[in-house]
Amino acid sequence: MKPILAIAAWSGTGKTTLLKRLIPALCERGIRPGLIKHTHHNMDVDKPGKDSYELRKAGAAQTLVASQQRWALMTETPDEAALDLTFLASRMDHATLDLVLVEGFKHESVAKILLFRVDAGHQLEEIEIDDKVIAIASDVAIDAAVPVLDLNDVAGIADFIMGWLKQQSH
Image 1 (tube, helix red, strand yellow):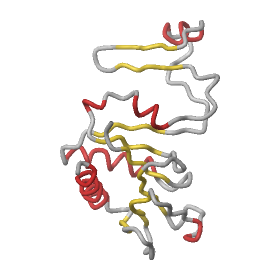
Image 2 (image 1 turned 90 degrees about the vertical axis):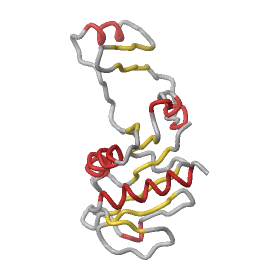
Image 3 (image 1 turned 90 degrees about the horizontal axis):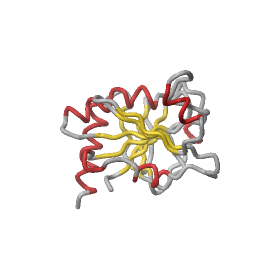
């Protein structure tokens, strides 16, 4: 399985904003990233009224919708107690990836870059650095035992990830 790297932070810190800029920066460097996004909301990728939605709601445990441009697999998980990041990552086609980025899952035991934004409503003292934190990306200076990256320097964060990826292959 390819390396998994979580971008973790409190809600409103800018995880999605960073990833929307970071993914193209990694692609420009020849990295093929996959993405798993965690949401706390009940979500549906299908639309009521569409055939695939109606067939899934009729009781199909898994529904795969495919077109020439993309395909999506929807799996009903009514009995699942908790999300399993390793299982979710294993569902991805790792032959087409170099890295699996994860938005959220901050309590999972995977490598992560924590984000801190001074105006996001939290204090520096609240940052929890465990042995899986490989860096902190912040918009203010932080004294930490891990590298501190400039949250607004997407190229610098991409370069850091490139270096980390090289270490993972050894």
